[in-house]
Each structure stands twice: as C-alpha cells, then as structure tokens.
Length: 188
Ligand code: GRF
Image 1 (cartoon, rainbow, N blue to C red):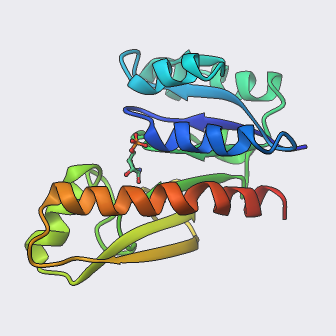
Image 2 (cartoon, rainbow, N blue to C red):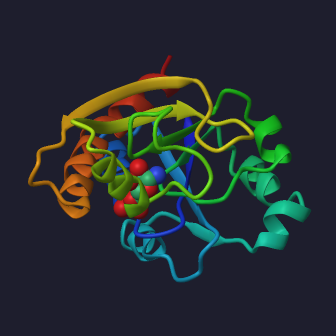
C-alpha cells in the first residue's frame, strides 16, 4: 500500500488534484504535504482536504536530516513534486532512489533548467514561436529537470495564445495525466 508525500512551493492546484484522485482510491494514500514556503496556498488546500502538512526552512532542508527523517517516520514510499522550486539534497535523493517524480510544464529537454519555472516557461515558448508545448513527467535527480522522462503530452500553441492561455492548456494536461501516471508508477 504505497504512501506518498507531495512537495509544493506555491498554489498547489496539482497537489489538490492528486489528493482528490487518490481519495477515490484508498490503496494509495497521500500522507503528507511539505513546503518550503509558509505562505503557500497549497498548505490551505492540504488543511481543507485533511492532509497533514509541514513547512521547512532552507537551513532545515539543506543542512539537517529532519526532512528525510520525517518522511521515514511517516513511512513514505514515494515523493511527488508538484510545483516545488528547490533542488533536492542528496540525503533525500539517496533515501528515495527512483522514487521521486516531478512534473514540468513544457516538453523537456526544451525550456528546463534553473530559473525555468512558472510563467517564464510559457513566455519563452511563445517568444520562440513554437507550435507545440505540453508537459513532461520525469524522475528527479540532482539537476533541475534532467531526470529520466516517464511521460509527455502535447498541446498546440496557436497564434492567438498568450502565456496565460498557454498556461491554462498546460494545466489541463497536468490535471488529466499527472495523477494517472503517478498511479501507474507507484503500483508497478
Ligand atoms: C505546474 O505548472 C507544474 O508543472 C510546475 O509548477 C506548476 C505548479 O502549479 N512544476 P500548481 O502549484 O500545481 O498550481
């Protein structure tokens, strides 16, 4: 019975979608929401959905073992990143080899790497004149957006798209596919 923790830094709409998806499917549980940002809206979403949450500082995350210890104390099997902006430290990566998954709002390897997140991604896709964008779900390693790709889905970019309308198309792909792909990976 896999137990999952979600890491998120901001809004948390994907986190909510994932929690709601697995609420229907009690063999897989979301047991913890963790954030580096005490003001992140994902914390309110977790509270409303009855999921325990915790916030950690940069010092705690990078200089102590408190986060992996909390994960182990909660018997967490998989870590799901959903809009989490910090690189994972080695103590977490080595405790969860092949068990950490991220979603990126573009077709990696394009538009990935440090600083490439949120609306910056969609602005770059439109500025480049690309005809398509999409989502990439991938395993997480010690570099930004470079782990092995698990799944991609595409959407068209039309001439009338703005970064905002493209972000909305990409979000719809995220909501549709991220919970399903997580489901497949953790039950493999
Ligand atoms: C998503 O677009 C995801 O691909 C990226 O960060 C965004 C998070 O959005 N990694 P939300 O916080 O889930 O609303």
